[in-house]
Amino acid sequence: MKTKIKVPHHVAIIMDGNGRWAKKRGLPRTAGHGKGVKRVKEIVKEAKNIGIKVLTVFAFSTENWLRPKKEINILFTFLSNFLNTYEKELMEEGICLRIIGRKSNFDKKILKKMAELEEATKNNKNFIFNVALDYGGRWDILNAVNTIVGNCNDKKSIPEAIDEDYFRNFLALGEISDPELLIRTSGEQRISNFLLWNLAYSELYFTPLAWPDFDKKQLHLAIEAYSHRQRRFGGAN
Ligand code: IPE
Ligand code: IPE
Ligand code: MG
Image 1 (cartoon, rainbow, N blue to C red):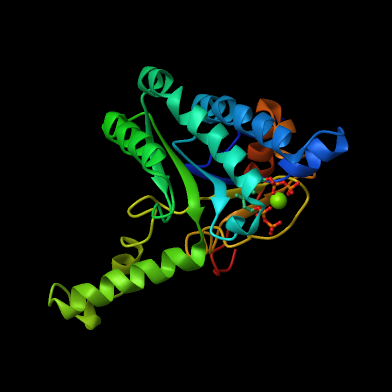
Image 2: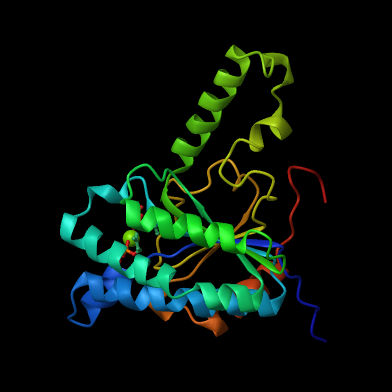
């Protein structure tokens, strides 16, 4: 008998392996980024079809600035094309798009587009799609701490009020519940400074496939694997 598939509410993905995907084919690393960006819309659509409600993808980390300038520039050109051609579909599908991350290092044009898309889609209720750009889990926690310290100094809060529920509201994901499932492509088995706070009890799914090869079927396989996990949150079963 086939067991019923348990669909997670929130899935996070570390989209890794673009460079190696390209290298294996004798192509420049940036060709892998081009192919990788193309996969994203397909996976968002399928996630929504499956019944997932929130998808958070890691697109650029606070450490990825260490890469050659040329690679970064090309990657951001792809990202900007991605954003510039997405609004119609986001509206048709009822998807709310949010950019999470530092935002202070981007050029004005891309920031403007991000703000436009966030504003245009903010009332869409079918699905939330978070794109983590210039995001780092350590940055996120420190950013929350700084805001809270400011609030305490301004007497808008008191240290005694700071518990886990209060704290999480100041993180980039805010009120969004923690991902039940984290997927990482490319065979690496690490978090690489993604959602450090929010992934505390997420189920981890690693696949050797590079992100450009992660298609709809692979998403179904990940959800199926999640279905068989037994979550305990520290309790006894
Ligand atoms: C993921 O692919 C995309 C980003 C980190 C921006 P990589 O570029 O890290 O590809 P690999 O891991 O080097 O193969
Ligand atoms: C993680 O991948 C960041 C993104 C996918 C955006 P990296 O390729 O930067 O991670 P490491 O360096 O292998 O840990
Ligand atoms: Mg990588």
